[in-house]
Image (cartoon, rainbow, N blue to C red; front, side, top):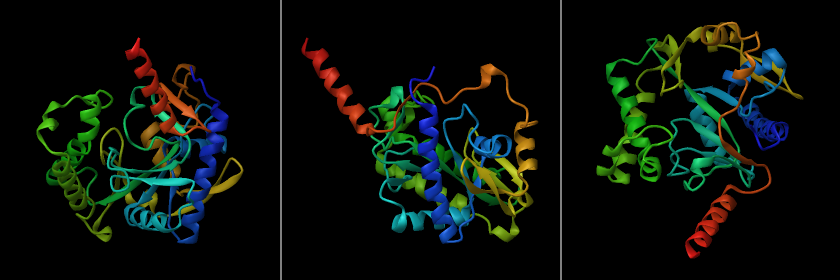
Length: 284
């Protein structure tokens, strides 16, 4: 059961999506509404009524250019989050966070990363094959393993997985291996020699689509504006979801679990309040 105004959250995220769209159009960066946001655009012409997030994908070259543009032109009310801008960040894709807001798993409130409301930006990796080869699969495992170092220290990996082996590696070493493994992975093949795009599903680059599915983009209505989606969205969505135009059963219409959301208060406020409450209890 949500204890926040879902529609207000959706509209806040929509503002953020418009900023992403503004930068991409200005710099001719191609992006695509993806996953549930793509279904929402086609089936509902906006958000899936019960959805609480927005997903965007970009081809790797555009993804890297978008990061450069954000460093110079992203509106100050937003924050581009990746390993470089936030050393405690643990995901292999970027997010655009909304400053002075909160969206955090209840058991992650104290984890010292930016936890504002966000939009996920997923990179599409051009690749010759439908899945990573042996070498690149190993690189992906290194990225996944070492990117969770600080999270593991905080929570013993409870949210993702438990792995106490990480305690033997200094954080600086973990960051170095992660960054170099990821750089090798994303630059392993030239675009023209590739037949697929790989993207993140449950694990890093574990979902693939034929290259042709993302070769062109079109505009579609989403809420009160027009945004980009891949022209072959139907083939993409059907291959992953099946008959995505059919509404799922009621029990499957939910969000992302026990999340604290506040559209007006900064996530750091929750930390300080939690710390004050803990101090009060210890003083009793």
